[in-house]
Length: 153
Image 1 (cartoon, helix red, strand yellow):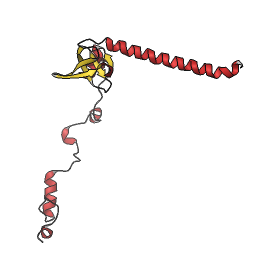
Image 2: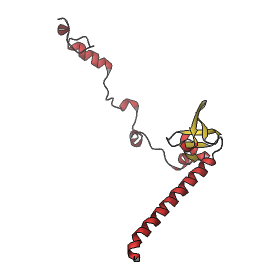
Image 3: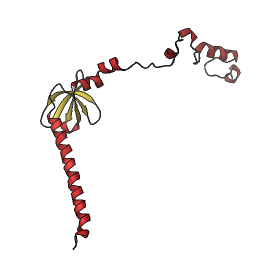
Image 4: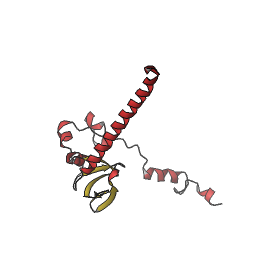
């Protein structure tokens, strides 16, 4: 056999070796991350729930999702161990950098135009007293929308 026929097999075996090596490396990083959990650290589960670690055992982790709410999870269910500032930013909304650096974006455009008194706004919703007056003017009782004669049959 010449080397040209063996080359695709060699490349295939090399690619498989590199893929398994990177997967093994990721598994080792995840295991070391899970082993670094200590009580009091914030974590995110693979389901997306944020909680605080209360107790760590060999295969399980006791999490506190809310004050007084304790949940028992497998260690493999922990997706990420978060730094304290990141956990507080996500869960409690504590973010000093955004409050200092970026401007506040208004919910509506009225604050951008400058003329936003409440009496100048147009109410586009139906009013209850107009609906009742309209139904009574048609001769109905205002409840079912039918006139009085049709209901007397």
